[in-house]
Length: 302
Length: 239
Image 1 (tube, rainbow over the protein chains, first blue to last red):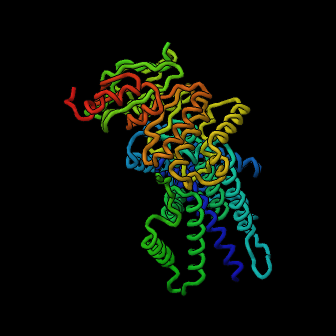
Image 2 (image 1 turned 120 degrees about the vertical axis):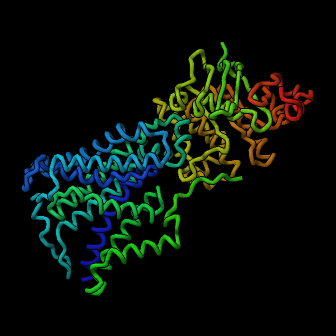
Image 3 (image 1 turned 90 degrees about the vertical axis):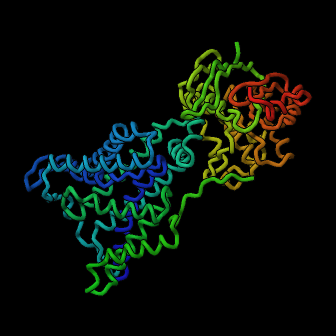
């Protein structure tokens, strides 16, 4: 039982962490809270099926063999985010952070309505990877295969992202730009390259979340990005805005808290699980308003 | 031909004029100090040359090519590097990572490795602390890192804004020592903002005295300490 709880907590928290990273990456580099991230997720879900307002979804990209399908959806997410940056956020580059944030809201609403026009408002069933819900026995616990895949994928993504940020040229430039964009430019770092790179990574992470959500729920719904976007945003705040390890830690913590509350609350209180969860968030922020891992800026030293 | 040419430069922030009608040239390999009271426009001048601050009017040239309007990323590629006021070290990056940020504009990896070795030889403390977070260095060490970091872009012209700010006099001596020997080694053209004219006179070079966004005197730094030009610039009637 407790082992089962651990897998629940890890898989849920892992997805929250991936979603939170997508937001923290962009905030770190250009101080933009991208409220359209949830719609990036929704768009990546709908990219699997063909546009139509019928109740039953016809697979589009979803017909590809699984490895190709994953690559195609990751590429779609990255491309969508890069295009959004070029068309919406680049013209606003020198605007105030508030203008950027409002721009991201507008982009999110526009994307959501685009999905409504193309696909209609009713949720659609997507039958992909139905076999993945089959349980696997691990000691005393029965764990859906999907959970194991999700946990493995999250670990692989975190390792790859960490390696990329630490070892690659683009990663170095992204970290320098996140610390002091103007100084990085004075050293010849190209702003467009760094920002496009951050958006591409963020969009690919949104696509990962989309794939997991489709596999878990078997549904495409225009609203499905909203709830996870909210939790991911809370995770970036709790983790400390702009701190990538903070976003991951807080995402995992919120997922774990959510799974623990689900299992530990008495039946009568269970419908109010999220109220308890957000109360916990308030308590954490009362004691650490700057977040758990506030990005420590380089203080001038004498 | 002058290495660096400033012609009729003006910099404005909204309605505030920081610099107006500023013109001077810097010869290749020269060491030029810019001095003057707070608000004289010294940092705005360096900002305009490096592309960080837009010029409202005028023209900035390096080797006859126009730099003004290019923006900092492209100006850095032309071979002009900046050691900014307050050093602006990337505190969470390691010392070596700080040094490598500016090498993205270079293609010759072997030359980059050579320059890293040169930087480590000139500033041995940076080699010792290469893998430490740069934010953990002392102020003087951070100033050395900022200079070494600017050199890693392989500049022909280097701008240095207030390298002595907040440092003990002994450390300032050391900073200027290294700066001058690196200048000789690399054939650099140096433009240094320095508040203290006695310091500039001791290091040696040409000096431009600014006040209210204009040049009030231009000559050998050693001559300034003797003349009354300084007190005039700081305390006299505005021109």
